[in-house]
Length: 76
Image (tube, rainbow, N blue to C red):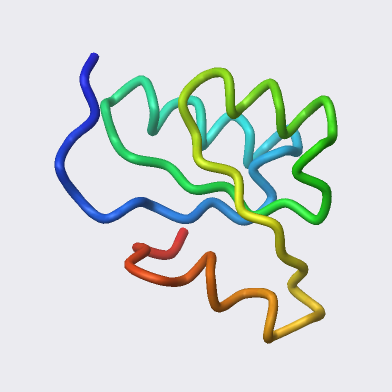
């Protein structure tokens, strides 16, 4: 399915079990998905990136690191 022309949906925890399922379902529905990851080089981050998600490095405990992830995102 082609991606919809829309702002990306930010999935926090998208490299984990629950968040990964959410991210994959959103991608399957054609949404643009942005995943926040502390380690964009991790195997889990690479796996969801291969599905079409955009991976953005950030940490919920570091507010400044969240700014790039939040630009033009719907928040999940």
